[in-house]
Image (cartoon, rainbow, N blue to C red; front, side, top):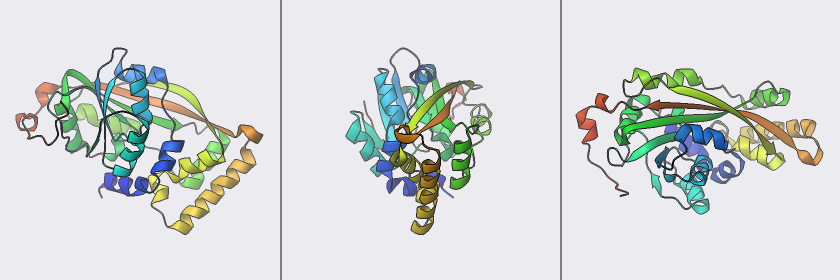
Length: 260
């Protein structure tokens, strides 16, 4: 199954919820992923722009790519940044066009066998690929209950990132982790759950049943007007590209878009 297509179908219907509820990323995590000096960044699977905004705030030049036109519409309505509708498996950019490629909460949706050569192609020599996920802190009881309600299986990030050096196109990834809290009222928590592709793709009655359980969880654990606080660990990975391992035919592939 094309999992990125499943993602698009799920998120298109809940693009506004995605933009409202998804957490951003700590400034120190962004600095670790991309660096202190402004560079040209391609963000693949940009979604509604949580990472895009953080990259712009840090002074970087950003191009945002996603396969969902609805999601990109949300991003473009909030941020002044070039947006491109496309897929990570076939990038419409010149070889060596970017200093850093960032995938925030999205790399696990891509086919690594097709995507990694494309990411290596559009990176300059010495450039790097940076991956990041916000993972919920399951040590908090109400968060564990939330996970059971939405039937969420955590991604094996070590297994996912192992594909980088195995491809021969990237070095061994470095890793770092940063913690932060997200304040949630009832609407934000419901939007956070509704925007998950696995929930959005379900039948209306089943989705409504899940959201009703989430609302009940909120009412039983929220602290008055203060709502709930979700603790996240922002897990970061970065790896330098090995340009000399690229197939010459990949580098010379005809381009469809040139952003200059």
